[in-house]
Image (cartoon, rainbow over all chains, first blue to last red; front, side, top):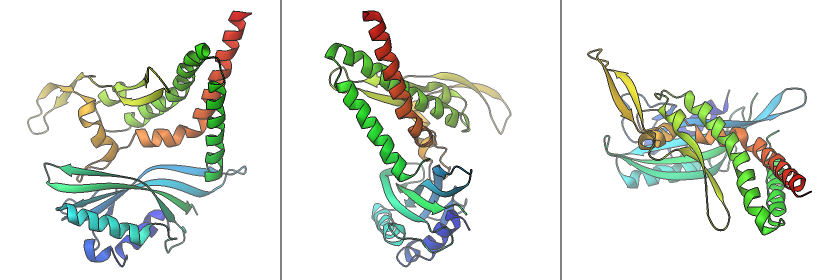
Length: 128
Length: 158
């Protein structure tokens, strides 16, 4: 199990988040027919810890969560729910992932008329 | 090694470096700042270009990534990113008709969409991974450049 599947499970099963987005959480790209609101997560980059024997046991991925919704109120609610369900806790799963807040940016797409919030978290996880 | 502990050490090294520059006579400091900042930012620029080259862009974005040092008075800042005003004529093919045509690519108009993605397209980040990939080397390169700069100045004055 990787940190990606652990994050997926935590978001989809999140007590605060799941009533808002259901299972509309995607890695890398949203399904073509995905209806807002939804979240797309992507690994932006990864710092890894290398040991002298060449093995690495920890990684520090920078993960971008793009929250898209039809209203700003909905974006704010989902961002807060995401924070409640994943920030500052060790997520269930073998990767023992924890996420700490890094940065946040708001956006609005004129073509799709969707409000967005791009939230970055720095992960700390076991690579095995 | 890139643990949080080692990042803290790197930050300490960087702060030590800044203190060393501050301790230089004012005349020397200006040149040292430019030279040292440039040495660090070049690494980020090179890395950003290599990450941008992986994106599906026409190549205009990769070519436009540049390094600018700002701040005429006070402390200086190095900025790495697409150059404002950069334009490149690129050739495209219309997917429906197969006709070829030329258009002007202006990377500053779309570079943020590549870095952060949109609701329908995935992000192809090039700045954030470049910073992550080089942060261990930047402090070292800057320290080496300061050493080189001072050695040159001393050689000139003797």
